[in-house]
View 1 (cartoon, helix red, strand yellow):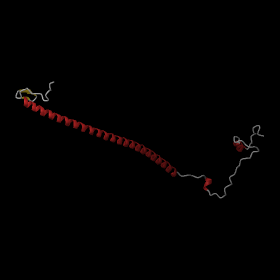
View 2 (cartoon, helix red, strand yellow):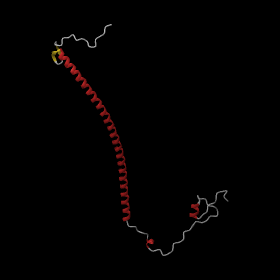
View 3 (cartoon, one colour):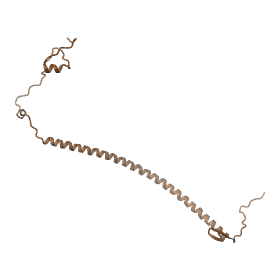
View 4 (cartoon, helix red, strand yellow):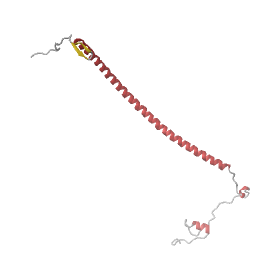
Length: 162
């Protein structure tokens, strides 16, 4: 069994001129630039990864703040609509009160004329209020009571009431 070497042997000539993305140069110089560039690319990738993670955290925090602000604005709009409704109700009641006060002022300004017999002082004591309806001989039905009191005629009782 043969063991593979950990570092493969480089059989290329390090002074050989090769074509690279940076132009034509020696192989050792191109290898050094590529190694340094690859290290720089790894650093750039790490920076981009860190920036993306930081941006994601900021985006989540911004979305949470945005949702909180939207809830607050919605509550404020709801409150403002209720205040507007109450304001319109108060304005309507105030307009109604002003209209009633104007009508009352108009009624208060009108002169009231009393009937001629109420203008003179009442010298007689008032008569006692009593029941002037005739008392029937039988219990008068409430249906017939207006007839009994207005005409003075007592109607015949229904059969079976004698």
